[in-house]
Length: 447
Figure (cartoon, rainbow, N blue to C red):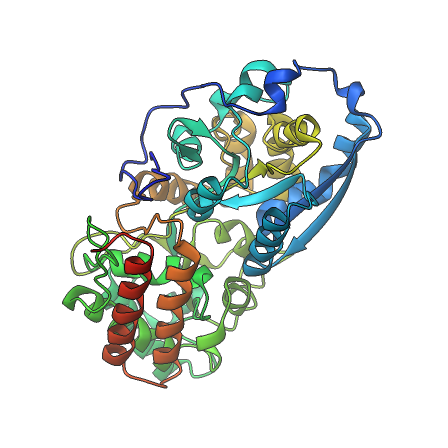
């Protein structure tokens, strides 16, 4: 995926060529050659992280990094909007508080255009530690963090869309695993009637950009795009109207009472606690749902990759990595932290000790340990679906603009209002169309 910091649009292929290493001006990697780990003893790093299961390995194994390097690390963890606000404030004020930050792929155009994160190519060339085997990282994940042939983060997450359902409940009610959006809606109606003790469906409904992946991923199944290739909003198109009508119906009529405010953690908790029978979200939740220590439905979860009326798969494209901030005074130490995070040792421990089966490390995925873990824990079906959802992933529906956060907040706020029954779907989409058009005109994309 090749971003353009000027226009923000991206090519749709997730199978692009691997990283092309190129020099990046101004980084201290060009001035300081690779140094031994011991040279960083006494350095203090401040790391700003977005909450989520992918940071569990950092929290769990951090003492090993500190012992190996002598670096002291202070972690700060926030929800996604707060983490972004913290970084923006730090970067725009020039205080240089943070050395490492989480970088979601949808923020890459904005952060690069603003100059908030450091290009990594010269570090790979001149300061590569043995922790890093760049060939282990899927090329599509690297590509999602690349702008104009420069890499800005090392990915520790690559996710696709996956539909989860309570296999035990479906068997009890004689329901087949849903393969289409129509079948999802039909199953929700049956569950509501025959199992009133259960919430038929749960999903993201909060009025922030963190919900946009669910909404646009669902809409992809209907052939709906939020923008055309020229950047003109299509929020009120017939395809988007049909898609959001079905999605809002699912959330409003068959979701929890607080469906309009559900974040991804709250939505997934409804399913993992056994309260809900179905959910649509990222493939990464399979690891949590099948963990008896975190889920009451472990062993009773089924997986499908449904399609919508247009024949497209429902999507939930998401990649996340760690970046070195441009304002850091400890860039080489921060770079060492990034390499440790994606190392074979750390990612293998994520699998064997933390039970994470979706680590984006090709060495781990191809290992006998991975196959054995899936077999012993009854996860063969999930891990096969996981590989399939990565192959199905596309970015053609995604709004890759530096104004992403504003775009996402605007659209998701309107869909949340429709879920709350404050306005009709048609009214919410008409409002979104007007507001998005204003955003794009102000940003200079439209005449």
